[in-house]
Amino acid sequence: MSSAPHSAGPGPRVREIRAAHDADSLTVYQAYPAAIADAALAAGTFVPPFKRERMTWIKPSFRWMMYRCGWGRKPGQERVLAIRIRRDGFAWALANSCLSHPDGEVHASHEQWKRQLAESPVRVQWDPERDIRLQPLPHRAIQVGLTGEAVRRYVEDWILDLTDVTELAHEAHSLVRSGEAGAAEALLPAERPYPISAELAARIGASAG
Image (cartoon, rainbow, N blue to C red; front, side, top):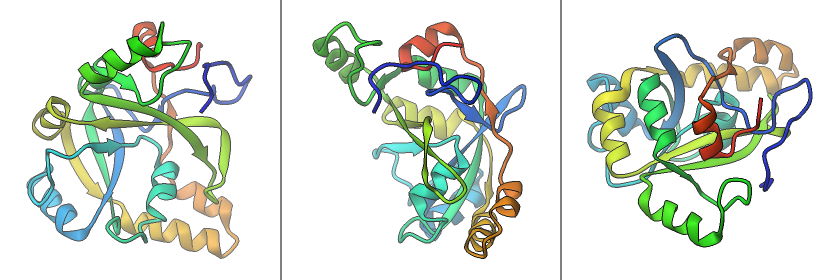
C-alpha cells in the first residue's frame, strides 16, 4: 500500500472513493452464500444466518467486488448483492474509522494509530482498483469493514434496499471471456467520484482534490 495519498493527474486520484450514488444514497457490494443472500433479500436487510458479530466488508467498487468473489464463482461468495445505503450512514462509518495499516500522512505515530484502531468500529483499506479483466490499476478502491456498533447501524438503519446482481456478474464475466471487454464494461454500474468532507478525507487518507 502506498504510504502517502497523492494526485494521479487527470485520471482518478490514487485514493478516491468512486461509487454509484445519488443525493441520498450510495451502492455498495457484498457476496455471500445463498442462505445469507436469500434471507437478506426476503427481509430487506441482513438477518440470520448472517452473523452480526463478524466483521462485514462493504465495497463501493463493482469491479473490486468481482475480483474478490471471482465473478460470483468462489465458494461461499456465489451470490452478489448490491446494497443501497444512506449517505449519512456511510459518513458515520468514515468518521468512526481507522485505516487497517498505519499511514505517516494520517497518523502522528504508530502508537496513535494503534489507539485509534482499538477505539474504532470501522476499518478502511485502499486496495488496487481492477480493470474489466480484474488486473490491478494504479489507483485504489476503498473497502470499509464494519464491526460492533457499525454492523448494528448498517443492518438496522443504513440499508435502504438490496438487489441480487449475480446474473449481471455472470453475464459480464461471460463477455470478458469471449473477448468482448467493451461490452462487459458497458454493463457495469456507472461509478463516479463520491464527495466527502476534507475532515473525512484526512481521516481515511484520501487523495487531495
